[in-house]
Length: 128
Image 1 (cartoon, rainbow, N blue to C red):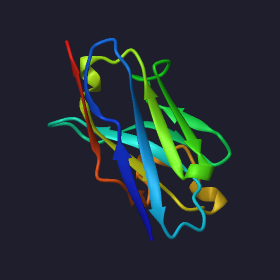
Image 2: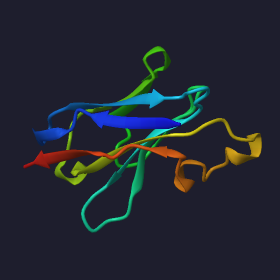
Image 3: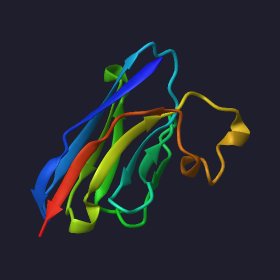
Image 4: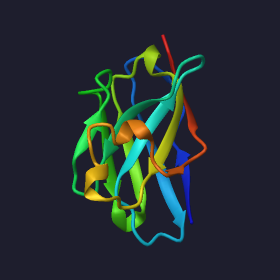
């Protein structure tokens, strides 16, 4: 049983920065990958950034060079540092986590399939 709670969202002007946090609570025996997804009104959910327990990262092309995902396993927390924000970044941002999977599960579509545990989301609004 794992619960994820996002925080740090808000309203910011274009060019500004925000840092999102996701705290995991509950019975946590083992967590492998963690990720951030987002969904804008009228659009499909998309992966923003993901990282495996081994440190491999995967970023959406639209955020490369601007966003950074990191994790603090001692605090059971994952972060998303967002710099140079654009109005197109406006969305609800969701934290997700996954337990260990068989080796063959980690293919090129791993993050696209979604992870097991999800938070309720935090709103990020970027104004012009």
